Image 1 (cartoon, rainbow, N blue to C red):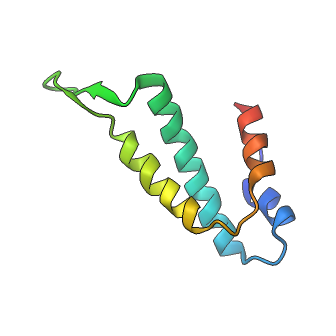
Image 2: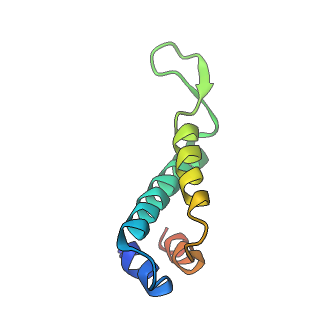
Image 3: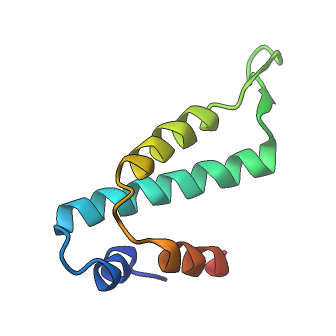
Length: 87
């Protein structure tokens, strides 16, 4: 298991730990949401009615992605590559 905050800290030694933690949390949430969207698609069936609805994870991915985008100064390419390789 990768310690994302420690790895981000290696690439961003001058940034505050809280910023790296927020980024790591948003990245983990985004990756989980993206995995669900990939597995189930953008449109899913409502669990009670069976009607097609937007996958709720789309909203989660969007909000997490916005946080990541606003923290663009954080160098994260190496960590993202590590997470992708981990599966």
